[in-house]
Image 1 (spheres, rainbow, N blue to C red):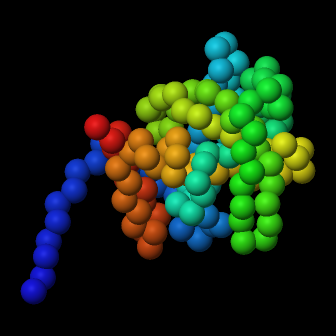
Image 2: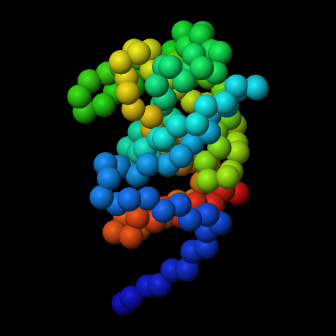
Length: 136
């Protein structure tokens, strides 16, 4: 028995399927401060996590946020959560994001809480296509 499904999405983001990960341009903002960066879509990440330097660019003292330890396959690291705005594919929304405590942390990720839980998502990796619609 074969099933067929029809899904509709508002946004198509094309990326290079040959590159490391699914990179997505992100605008990160707080008040009048904004920074543009590239983040990896990470369905295994619990949170949206960004480099410490971006908190500082936004005028935040990272340690004043909510402390949150994050565990990975290679160990644990400390992050600090802050409310900020994210802009992805032309959609702007408020989210709890986390900044790494360690200045040596060099990766930015869009995870399940704060990003994936706000969107319907489809990935056709062989074609380098990421489909998004706000979750209503």
